[in-house]
Image 1 (cartoon, rainbow, N blue to C red):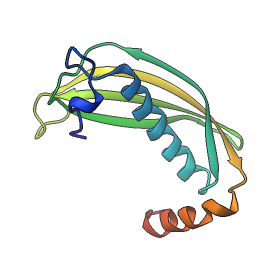
Image 2: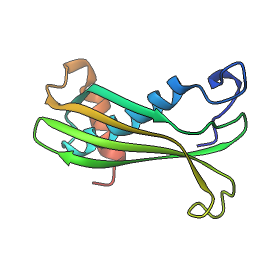
Image 3: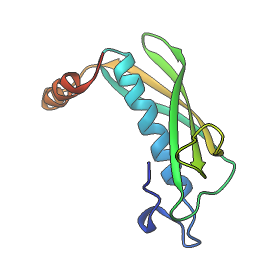
Length: 126
């Protein structure tokens, strides 16, 4: 994701930690939503460690992996890296943050949101 621009930076031109938290919870929520069969999910715990800064213009990469997928609770680990060489992501990754997100799953989908679920279902490769 090449979105490290002025609107998401601290005054010192580094990626704001709140944006890292937002990315982490969003990635985990999407993964949990897909893993639960497109049921409604909600984050109930977020723990994040910021280990290195990403500066204005840095290319960042986020990856969410499930740690535990249960019927009602899921736990996801999310890592955000900055890339020094986008053509070689494995050797150029430098960890920016590491987080763990816990979500409650299988909540009922409200009627006004059912269209969004159907749109996602038509686009997802499940």
